Image 1: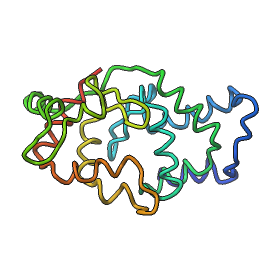
Image 2: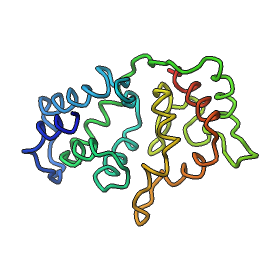
Image 3: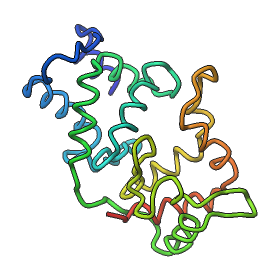
Image 4: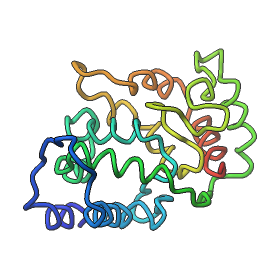
Amino acid sequence: MLAAIVIGSFATSARTEDSGRGAIPKAELEAKLSYCKTCHGLSGQGFRGAFPMPRLAGQQPDYLINQLQAFIERRRTNPVMFNVAHVLSPGMEKALAERFQTLNPKPLGGGSKELAGEGQRIYEQGIPSAEVPPCASCHGADAKGAEAFPRLAGQLHDYIISKLTNWSKERGQDKAKPDNSDIMAPIAHNLTQAQIKAVAAYLSDLD
């Protein structure tokens, strides 16, 4: 259904190179932003439907742009996002990413309160015996990320569980074009399902 909506909305559009001259027209940016929010929530806070749509609010612009490019280049698998991303100009990618960073709704939460304490320990201290470094070493003590390292604070716990569980099936699909996702591959592999759920529970309630 989503794929049909995407094709209907963007079939007549073509991806063009941004000349760098002038800003994206406000009406055009608002239209694209509204389209993104139909899946990612009215404030970009994420949405739970048939499957979880990730929070984009407060996300690092460099990370969002990198992921849009990953979808376009098929380095990351997602048929819906491929159709969405490949029609965006570089200027529109940048404008959307910068706008989403300014949004700051309360997290949807929903993770297990009982697991959050263990998740915080893993996030802050890592798991040395499993060669898992502290998540905070890349994503920051506040889990808000920096530059190409994404914000995790407030991310939907079920989305985090899904991504970490299926990391090698979805990320780094073009070995000739490695990116930051390669850093996470062995970490995701070394985490148990229980540990993944704990980290996800902790992150899901962070502002």
